[in-house]
Length: 257
Image (cartoon, rainbow, N blue to C red; front, top):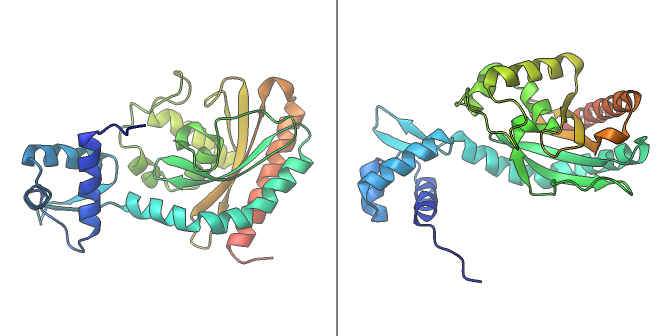
């Protein structure tokens, strides 16, 4: 099958690649000249890349460089295999001990998304949209909310610059940053984040995060189940189990027994 050509996407990727090959910030005019792109196109793409966190602008130099998001994504990819080895056994324990069929997931933050790096399913567990390598909006997922709740509020705001227009699935989920703040505050208070139908109708999840030596939420463990098949007591049990598993992951990440 012939791959369709999307000039804007190709040009944006060329800009990111070009910036990655330079230690110093690069002026937009230089990018336009060296990449043989219209200057107006370069400025438009730079604005989008800057808005999404892939590029930062250095006003004094009137130039552009790669944003922290690129390093975060790279770091997440490099650490994914290590996290999967540390968290994989915990996922298996969660699935075996769960009172109902569940899907256990291990996820990391990738900018304002979560990227799934591990998954284990029980027999007769629900079929979910989550697979290893899948990315979903962090503010809609239990694993994402668990990790966001562990970040400083200023960092959460930096991840969601459009505070009054958060994306949703099927119109479900927090629409504004203040709404998300309330959800994260509750997650901090109880030590577990949750979502019910924000990703897939009829499915709910609970999650908690592991913290590394620097205090950063390195990865979150989550459990997804059919909401109608689980009692309130069972939800409490699942929340406690995932909280304990996250504590165990924290100990592993920090080198504690």
